[in-house]
Image 1 (cartoon, one colour):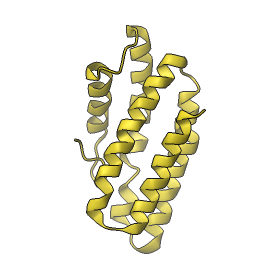
Image 2 (cartoon, one colour; image 1 turned 30 degrees about the vertical axis):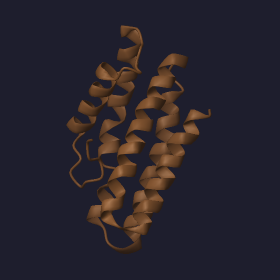
Image 3 (spheres, one colour; image 1 turned 180 degrees about the vertical axis):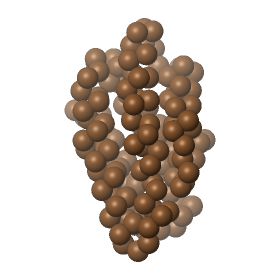
Image 4 (cartoon, helix red, strand yellow; image 1 turned 120 degrees about the horizontal axis):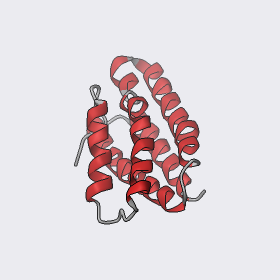
Length: 135
């Protein structure tokens, strides 16, 4: 499984994760045009997502968690819903599946750091992604 929580998570790794999911996951069954639409939208958020965990590694004290949570909240409550709203029903389902997979990777990543605040931030992000499923 890919590792997401790291200081140097490049956009190319995110794009690779997107393409592997869309073109090799058996749960994804969309016509080519819809696949391309989902891919374009996911790739579009790659640069923002790839920088999301930087505050955890670059800042110190509580400010790093405040900044991390701020980035996660903007991403999960503003950016993702806006992009998701431009998709059709089946495209939204695939979009949600992708973020479920990303959430699972994050959930597997954060315990290695042993920080309660990081766990709380990641838990909040995962909750935001699950809440999208219900919309």
